Image 1 (cartoon, one colour):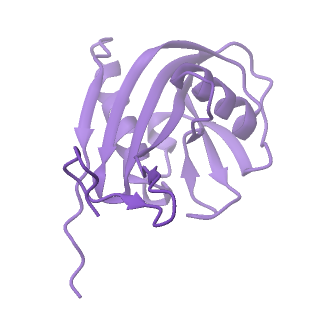
Image 2 (cartoon, rainbow, N blue to C red; image 1 turned 180 degrees about the horizontal axis):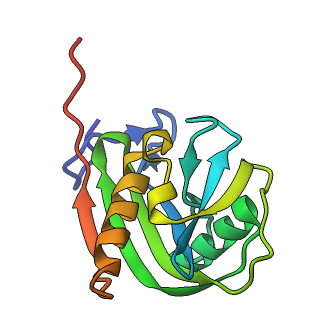
Length: 168
């Protein structure tokens, strides 16, 4: 139903009339860099088990996107990172998600797989397993980075990733 004063269908409790908002989920992560290499994690969980990704995950209540990105980098790659700022922002409206990736530099090389990763490794551009990347946002972030690195200029990039509706 559309609650009074609203313009969208919402889930409303029939008993107490409480509106239960369902809003987009925020995923935050990092593009961890060491010299000319990028740190990737091989997923130990679904979706996309066994494919490579940047360390990222759902933002928790009570944290900023930067705090969430650093936390996810530690949880997935056991890596310490110094953030350099927001780098990519992706809107995926068809799955109600927004992704924030921060560029950052590893503060040391003491990293390894966390419980959600099978493997963690540094890759030079020519070593990236492009056909084994887990999600389009990972591919796009890496493409932007390797392109921007040539000019040593890293603007904040924003994209909408819209998939056409599936045929029924």
